[in-house]
Length: 215
Image 1 (tube, rainbow, N blue to C red):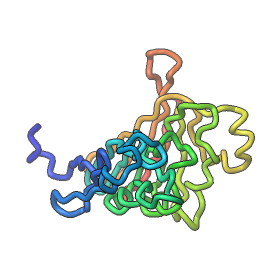
Image 2 (cartoon, helix red, strand yellow):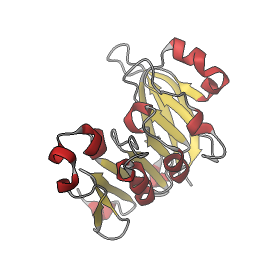
Image 3 (tube, helix red, strand yellow):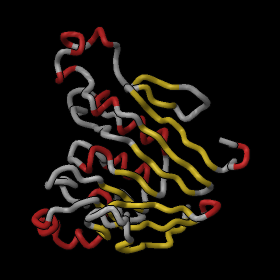
């Protein structure tokens, strides 16, 4: 609506059904081989894209601020089928962002080193679905060899036993329960992240973090 009034605001579709934006114009490239090459023409999970791999992916930009949301895209199976690493072509199209939603709830088959290094987020939101997530902890988001900025982590729910297993790295998890709200300041030069209560419908603010400076 009235897009000319907001020239610095943009939402870019990055991928869907394995069709990935190349980063130029409206050009896309399919990340998957021809369907005829699949064993059983898609009947075998080992030789066809999973439902997660065909997730819808987008990048939201406002001024210098960029946000990534990639559903459940994964790199699962790349060791025997290179094309199953959907994260790589997606990362190449997205580039650096300020905030990213962790792919596939922070599971171990997603958010590989190349992906995290390419996006280099300042903050990562993990929408936890199971008590083992983020699986493998948060080390991949705060490893300076992977992510120079060492991201702050915000989870919608963190199991206490999993937190204990994480040890000192759990200190990077600034919010361990509740809704996560990202509020970008006018012009997109900076932003705050809020933790909101999910214990009732009040949406009261538990804590505010920032300001973060957009790059």
